[in-house]
Image (cartoon, each protein chain N blue to C red):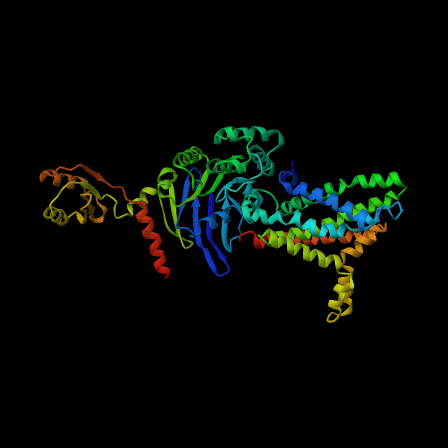
Length: 311
Length: 244
């Protein structure tokens, strides 16, 4: 469990993190979303004890970070941005070094390293120097380093950044597989990732929390929530008729792709009404679907709003 | 294995897995030999001692030690590994000490590899081996002081070239603090007692006095104190600089 209370970080005059408060519980994957420079990494660096906050409180598993930083660092596994490691070392030597630094007893080190190698699938590169590895493997070494001591809390800064789709999938599966017994925070600006792994997402902009919801709730905030889309050749008069329906707020028509989007009033469920309407007028539709909402649209809205406010 | 030992081991492996270690050792051995025999006239003097050999160590260290220390921290900061290191459950003092000690051990290895000259002098005559031992100790302490300065500069600068040059310059000032060329500069505007203080800080004065075989506790403590002060400064600068 991670508790942050009124966390702030000021660099010179620049406020990177501004009065952030949140709690991440065990069994939860919390996603930090936000534009670049929003303060995601800075917050993570403070939780992991790398940076000293200007003000505020951090507790990890009930332990106060500032009264016992070593105990807190013991509980955390951290994958810094870009997954740094010692390039000139072999994968096995690097993991052994981390195990030693983490105070894992000598007789346990070999087992722990083997376990993590197995889990992250690093068998093939066991004796290879890290500098010779591909980006995907390097990232995996970073992950292995973060979970070698089976930490209760896992903090990962952009764990899938720069990986190919297969590697992204692997990393997400790994995160999901560990989610039950750990508290996990990941930062990302890939919105599909929020759906794929996060139970909850916090959107940060300019150092402030602008949204804190489940991915589904975030989608509800979208104007596309419960919007109905269909592909068909349709007269403008009929579009006007749809627009005039009581449950419809607006209609968008994309002439090029013959795609119509109907936005409901107050995000209510209008799928039945629209499909009945289309049936009544005998319009042949090639596709008819309802949208859950678009995260990227919500993301843009909440983060841009904030920029305007500041300006 | 304690964290400090793990760091020392890793750092030493780091030196030897890059060409730095071999270049350093080869150049140090070659130059220390060349200086002792050609400039110091070790052989022609006809005396069974190693003082021509040790006389040139400060000058060798002046440009070789910064080459070892320059990457100590700046490389970690550049690569982002510093974030990894400092979020491990390890005390910061262990990190600073571990890195310093590994560099010191590395220089000690290079120094140890000069043993053929000691064997030669024992073959040629009957030198005072106690004096030679003291001189080796003095040389090692001097290298330690240089390394501690280098550690602090390396943590302050991400750029290794700047770290190298600054370290060399600061070491040079400390080395020569007792000589007129430095003291004359201060004489003009500092009160006498401060000038005396600066003079007493000279590495060269303390080094020479150890080399004469006067194993004064004060000289040794002086170097150990310099090392502690600069390592403490390293830790302070690390706190300030680690984030940028």
